Length: 136
Image (tube, rainbow, N blue to C red):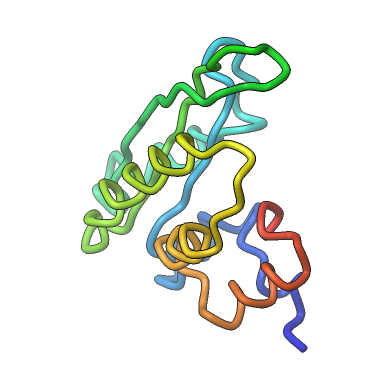
């Protein structure tokens, strides 16, 4: 059994990226009412982007919100290792597809997102089996 606490990337993104163990990090927040650094720790990543050690991209997607009864804008900020920058447009496509099917679980798409973020097959399977993918 895989130790999910050891497999988690949440809160360890920068550490794992600088060690070369995570190719892409993804953060998101409500674009209309942002929580700031609590949701997207831009100040932590900024020096590495400035030095060219990481690449950054932003993307805003209107995601259907059942509570609002209308789409809500979600701001995504992605960081990639320079030689892994191809993952950014791939993740944008995955996010667009994910946003088009709210409430519908798509295991293939979830596995693709995990692979883009650098999770191993074993980590992804363990998170899916435990039903905690969004917290991995």
